[in-house]
Length: 161
Image 1 (cartoon, rainbow, N blue to C red):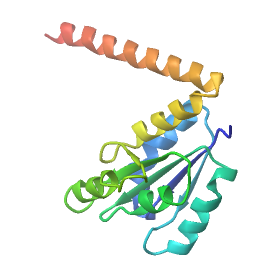
Image 2 (image 1 turned 120 degrees about the vertical axis):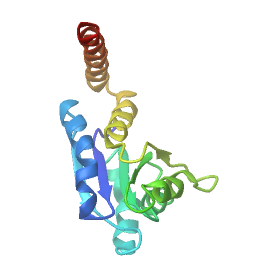
Image 3 (image 1 turned 180 degrees about the vertical axis):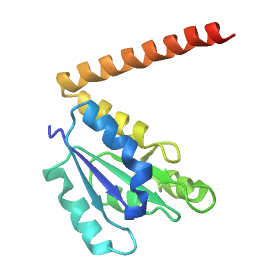
Image 4 (image 1 turned 90 degrees about the vertical axis):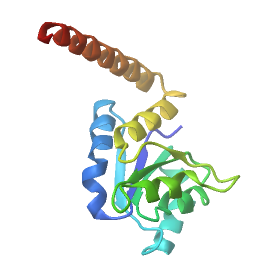
């Protein structure tokens, strides 16, 4: 299995909302590429990417706001898992969320929370970890650290109160 993630953004303006995915993938040592592709402005290029993505990637993350058709057009043209990140813009991201989760039967798109790039990266890592014990070990360590941080926060709260 290829252990690389593609991150597509509908617009360069989405980059600040997607940076969390970069951080998580770097921490888990999972390589990734980032591209700006639009379902509406670069339809042919997006289609070409989706049709050949299986040659380089194991998971595709698509971040888009407003009409948010990027994940759908990609999912319709690849058998790779596609994860949508609805980006907040107009309507506080509700428009993008609904565009991402209301896919027709037969074209699945996994969708994380509005601006949920960290969870998109973690879901990508979990998919890769199905066939990669090294990534699995790093995910286990990541979860242990999250637990430790939470317990430490609880101890600090007790001190504050």
